[in-house]
View (cartoon, rainbow, N blue to C red):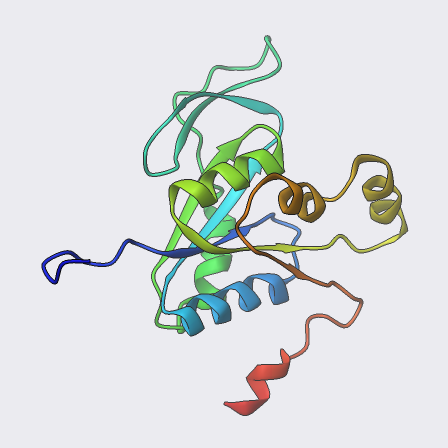
Length: 171
């Protein structure tokens, strides 16, 4: 690469939900800081479909329900954005939130490709009902691993996952 060009922008993409344990977000932030890249937090609205995709990964979407109110642009949940900021604000990394639409694994994979992600981070679901649902429909992590070449980091969730992460004891 010629000296005048800057290296391509890199990132870690994390699939986020409002019910996700903090440990998944904190793990993604730690990975982004370790790799010195941007953390892109993506939420996928499965009750909508993409109408237009923009080069930065954002989308314009419409609800699947024809009786639902039309959207102009998909909006990231401000409460989830504030929670992410509280969890990673002191990490010294750039954080961006993106609202997507459609099938989760497909939307996350497409975003990861657009933002040149080094890694995709997802959490597992916890509980018996979630395990049964994943058995019949497949997990997002499995779907991601089979659809693209970007490494997928799966953060296991347990009943005690909210304590300090193993590498946080070192600080």
